[in-house]
Length: 175
Image (cartoon, rainbow, N blue to C red; front, side, top):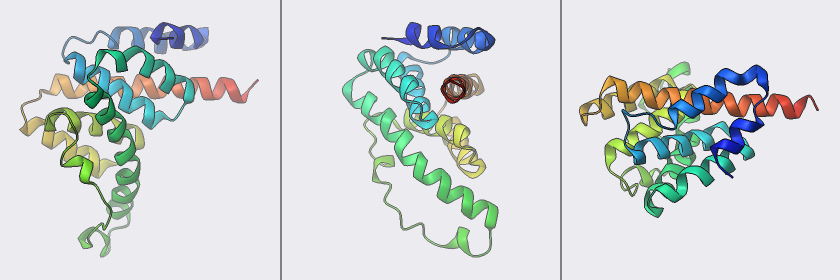
């Protein structure tokens, strides 16, 4: 099972998604680790079992065990952080000044370089729609030397993976 299986599961009306997933799997502006980890983190954020399974089958063997685990950790930690920080940002009041009191140790020692983990966190934040997190992670990756093309590529991967998951969910709901 691989991305080929995922692409073949997408119906004809989602041909654009299928083509985007294929081209993004070879996105040249990202290293293999950045690209594979972005696919994994985005799959976890998209929360579709088929997408997660196929993306892991495709990319996890290409990454070190530490990188594969870090990509999963980005999906997990940002699932928590995106909810919390989106709330503090949108509601305002005293909340943004209050300490989060949520454990986030994986962000300090994720198992990959800081820029790569931040890139994965950015991709997940794009899926989860947390503007505050997107701004923070985009600034961090740019300060660490990643280009706007690399940031855009990661967000394009997140968008395509999320669209594949949404399509499969819609298909399952209409059966």
